Length: 284
Image (tube, rainbow, N blue to C red; front, top):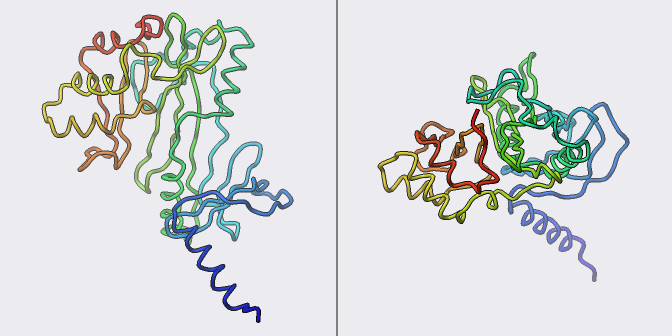
């Protein structure tokens, strides 16, 4: 005889096993557009098994609970054609400079825009969703509550003989008292607009680059340096005129202080020499 209870139990176990794998993407039934936007057909499952639906409008992407409550809003990324007047960090970027972007052909400019839209640089969405959920649980009963919001933009930040570098910057609240900022740099061929893999920009392997950059930072703690070399990630390079920095996201390193750890270099020329000659960012 067909046992409905047994089938139901097996189904529940299967679903629980799937969710236990962590943050995942699964299909959702399509619906008519609402004021929150149209469902994209995906949902995220957070660490505590909370489901978050994705809805899009022309201006933003909303991440909503199943009752429609919004916990995270991400503005549609925009490509600025010159560096902003007030960068989040006051590095040696020249505000208002386009670093040769205006000199690129319309076809190359469009190719860069298309690449950034279809394959945006690294962004830790899972981390932002978990933060947004914590904030929602803590403050959603407040009358003035506003969802966690991320402002996302791209802009030229440096150039070389054959490369234009485009910064991607994502700014948002970290908690009720502070903001957080993620930066990364993508390299594009000035002649074609094609994205250049970051490992091709340098004269050495990624492993050699990690070792060299960490040791050029002037640190003396061998244990810490070894940890930083192992955690090296090219997606966290930030390129400015004549300068290159490396940052480690919160939680990357043991006993990490500050939460977002930056490597800076006293001898910029030593870092510059690691680039291929055609990719070396101009100094101004």
